[in-house]
Image (cartoon, rainbow, N blue to C red):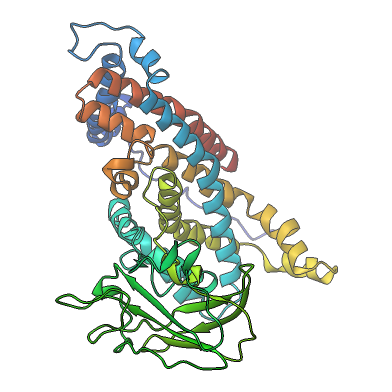
Length: 446
């Protein structure tokens, strides 16, 4: 130690000092980057918003016609606008909750199936087209005629299962020997006994309504132990004798015929063959009347008037849910994938069933995601416009009116820009609280 000396290391030279840019320069650089955004926001958002607010206090003729708050009073005194407000209230009360619920159900169920990707693709596919195009699709699908509208064609399948249409719908008796109506059936006036023949001629049947299996009508032979008869289209091209079966007159197959006793009670029934003939076997002694049953004249399903004034709003809501259910499903499925699986397994290990796991674990953990979907749909529903315009025909647009559509029609079809601006400001006021709630939720999550 005594002969050892320790030499101090020379100091390491520090890095060269870089002059810090001035505050003014930093602001200038930031301003240069933000200037384009500020210009666009000012031109496309700030100026139109201020102009709309100012314009709402003036009348239809322009800024030389100061109206004060008269336009805002008109909002709640004009039937078209009050209908729009009521419809928007219905939309807000129903649509966001339904879309969120459907998205949650789809997201949970698709986790347990092997074809989840295909199902999600099909459900999300309507998002690939515009709301206006989706409205056009549903307007065609909602046509009242079952042969044209897909929805009513689907409804017709179930309707005809329980209320099948009759073989005839608009027929009338060809002679006074037959009386009655399509609601009660056509009854032969003359009572018959065993061995009698019932001739039930009908007319006013268009050729297109005659069953394709119909062949030449035949007058049946008498049966001493029963009653026979024929139902036919009593019309001969070129003229003929009413009440008489002639050549070129077709029998009516598939017609339900009833044999009624003196009290009007049906004792037997039969269905006509392709030539229109029918027979009641082993008829007891007595007097009876042959009748064409009322079910023969049952009207075919005419379709539900989805585009009429009564159902137009539910029809549009269904179309809107069809478009947005895929969005809700994808967003909620992403949130569902982020849930820790050990939490779910722990609940199952503790004895919770699948429904309890879903209700007490999955849904609470998905609450932030569900609120995002729900609030987003409230904002979208308040602004709904194009799908209403494309689905509702002109005859029922007044019944399907919403605030955004009322604003457009007032400003650009009636050219009342003062009242139209007031409607726009009113819509903005409705959206602001929802936006504030959304911003607050974002800050709380951050």
